[in-house]
Amino acid sequence: MDIQVGDSLTLKKAHPCGSHEWDVLRVGADFRLKCAGCGHQIMIPRSQIEKRIKKVKR
Image (cartoon, one colour):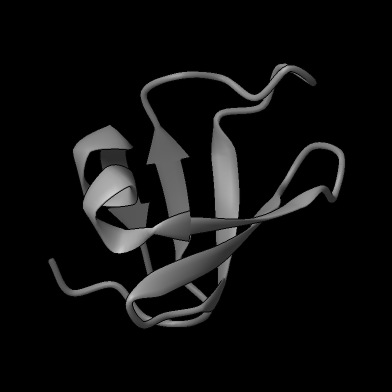
């Protein structure tokens, strides 16, 4: 998958705040994502995030 810093991801499962939207802050073996709803940041392995992506917005 071609995901770049600055993209916005829509994931299948919602964050506890209710938002499905995440902003990409870092790309590599791990992704750093920021929740568009509450601003919470997470680091998640590429293998896990690629399974959870519903849509990518540039």
